[in-house]
Amino acid sequence: MTAPSWASLDAALARWRDAGRTPRLWWRDDDAVEPTAALERLLGLAGGHSAPLSLAVIPEGATSALAERLAGEAGVAVLAHGWSHRNHAPSSQKKQELGPHRPAAEVLAELGAGLRRIETLFGARALPVLVPPWNRIGSEIVPGLAGLGYRVLSVFGPPRPAGLPVLNATVDIMDWHGTRGCRPAAEIVAELVGQLDAGLSSGTPQPIGLLTHHLVHDEAAWAFLDRLLETTGRQDPAWSSADALLRDGCVPAN
Image 1 (cartoon, rainbow, N blue to C red):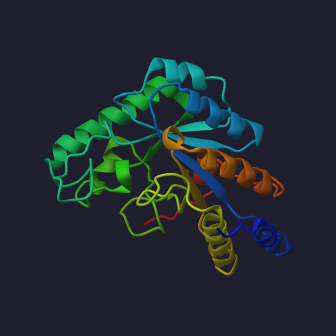
Image 2 (image 1 turned 120 degrees about the vertical axis):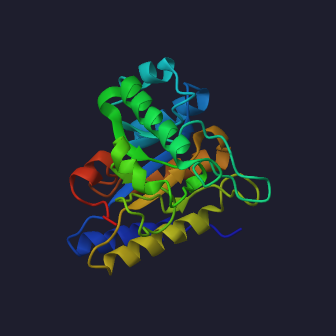
């Protein structure tokens, strides 16, 4: 197995410093509903490395216990992760909650209720950002999001025209189609370096978003995260919060 080149990540970050620029890295973790041992480990890593964390919370299952647990976590923002994270697509299609398989009005009603629940439970740490389950949303749903109060859409991959500003995750640490554990660390580091270099050569670099799923992390995933946060922590500032990216106009408008 190829060892990850952490020195290459250091060098990529140094190239940004030498150019007098700062990359915008942000971190999104999906599927929270309640306090768990895995969530405690996640919060411990984020707090220990002073890394702002955007937690995509499933509104239907979100508990007051989760809100109470996050109340003292200054670096944690909460995003709405669909409504129930329930698949409505047939088995012949990729999983999707927010697709064309139900009337758009029904889907939008759930999303409106989801944002209200997130705002009620989590107060000021709730952001008007929609994270579609499985990173998929039907094109017929997007035009109705602004009317519900959503200001930003967050899926996975490079920003694409969506009719709403997008703040995407761009690097997923999990091997969903293989081991369902952590991807090889060398692959993830190479991906990060590639995105950093592409951003440096761009006149308008987009934020680089790390995607994690604390409930399914294996030990390799936790170890990778710890090493990544340690390595990037030498950059000042190392990580941006989602609300800072929104505030600073770093979210592409589509």
